Length: 389
Image 1 (tube, rainbow, N blue to C red):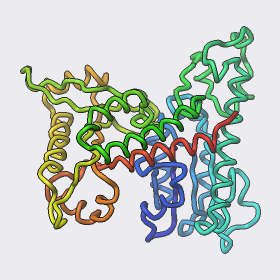
Image 2 (image 1 turned 180 degrees about the horizontal axis):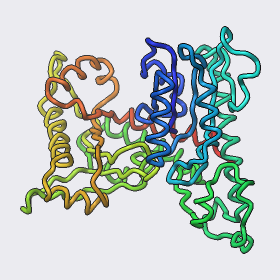
Image 3 (image 1 turned 45 degrees about the vertical axis):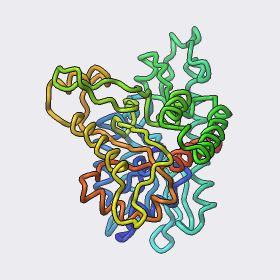
Image 4 (image 1 turned 90 degrees about the vertical axis):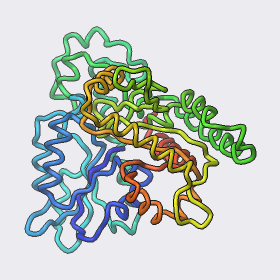
């Protein structure tokens, strides 16, 4: 899920804040702002201007002499759309963190929930987030029924849909969604195959265990096959499709770069195309004395760096193949290297970040196999928690 968190705590880092929301989001989908002006700019530029998706906003109350009620009123009075023009901006769930010293009883009007004793009372936080999202999605389903579009089949508008005029009755869906006869319900929470996704977690874990027993048998290609067959491990909530082993030709020669996967984001996602390279789970990262990166691990980072240089160059030949596969050029790209074990990564995390900086690997996200599995489990957990049956 994509979250905007507006915090008035000057020393509160994004990493610390994210610990409260791990059930709901990932690091790159968690947007933290520490002033009302920067939050409004984000909403105007990204959510309204670029039509990106946002699941909910949660905010502290007081910011200097101002408070967040002005931002709430601006949002609730808006006539804008967001998320590829599918939804009404004014309907985004907006949660308030209680401030007993500065709030009166009447200020909760317009907020979807008031979070008490944040961040200490996690149960209260979880209840209010879950309740707010479920209410939003119930209203969304009611809107679909109102216009005659079945959210499960996504196939047909009923006959009365052609004479639909009751726009004022819509709570979530935009008028543009109705007028365009949209069926673009390509959000993962409209997917009904949750059991299949949950079952894939066990399959991946079994494959990981088999790899550690016989590392020479279970090489990268074994996991390529699994990821192609179970694409939500790569796509998650933000990516619409994944491209496998596409040839990125170099200067009109027969030489090419071949990233294992390129994940293409939904138009509404606040993400960039992701280059995803797969190396062995059994591949160690550091020498035994823990002071430098092993040559094989270093070569893996260098390989991803070659992809980075290709994707971000201004070479017309490179741009031709990027547009061929992704449809257009993008302002930014993401780079992920799947390799190694979480135990080794976490034991030497500070050293890893230092060496990545020294070797110019800063832009590459090192993800272990355990990291990937845990991310997918969290995705399944929130789908089960927030699914509307």
